Length: 512
Image 1: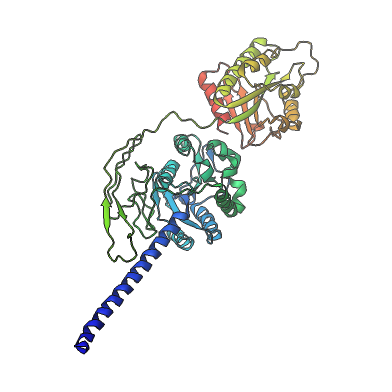
Image 2: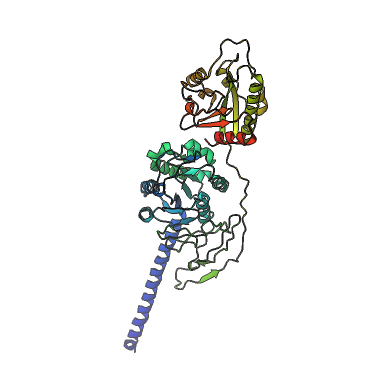
């Protein structure tokens, strides 16, 4: 009897052994999967936003005065800087995502350094790009981070930024990045860092300008390292499961450079990141409002005991909701910091005090607008028949309010008894030879002259403080282009000036 039972016992023992082996294997697989997910959750993601437009592929055109293009720039150059940065950070606990943008943005899934470098090799610039929307790239970052507090955002601004035509996009970007300055680096290889900092309301330590282009990759690495040290660790309620999961419908993981229309949407839930695997429905995005439908989330629970071979699965469907986000249209670019010296002409009209009073009114109206539209300080120096030291007096009495500045205008009186008359050429030489502008942080010169003959005069080129602005005003429609440098502005203003003439002068000063 015992002999006949042995085969059955052996079979039973074999089944038990196989079952235990299966449990061990399954447990190991689940453990490995959970480690992978935990590693992803603990890793930070660094986003690089690159504009797909390449000026090298665009037909030549006459540049506007407001177009900023002071250095070399192309998509390939920015992609190379990104590649160098990623390679330098390959051993760090970072994953990388590329955000490629035109008027909308397109993103890749999270990638390891090697995969990200390979992905960059397949991205091509667009010859005729649509108008750039930097805001769409930032919104994509905000959507994909969705509560992750340690992810970083590096924005390469377009090679060509036009202060006038791009104003709305920049204003929108400034509002959208509120609270994200410490996690954001703004990069340009054509614009100085100081100018980028002011234009984008971004702290200077988190800005890289054209002067940083040689060491750009290393500085991006330093940004990531510094932010890692200063950041506070936090774990979001839910996060993406792993890099193999399907990306959100607004993200295109392939190397295509065609941006979907849904990439500027904002998620409706801030405490979860949802990753639908089969849904590819695109919500509609308008200029003023954005409507987003939350995607279903599948949650897999970990078995409660190590001896269970069947994992219970529960599916939770989030209720569909619609959120409308209204983008304010009243946001303004942060005010420009200007300490400006007005230079008034008390020579060209001879002893005609009425003409000088008219010039005084022009200065008064211009200053009033500048004090209102910029962080403005102003001084007044006068050349010609005057008993006021030139140009020292104006720089020694810089005023912070328009009311105090108007007190300076009372000195615009023709001096009948003065023997030491300063002519235009001498005034320019004195302006150029003065060396204390930086001591009072004077970075702006508005030079006025009604003299038609400027032959023999030097070009205005004073050693002003950084981010200098020089505007020459040909009062009574005189041409000052011969004494104004190529990078500065010369305007003609009629004697009977209008509000439009004032606005043109203010625009020239603020857009430099």
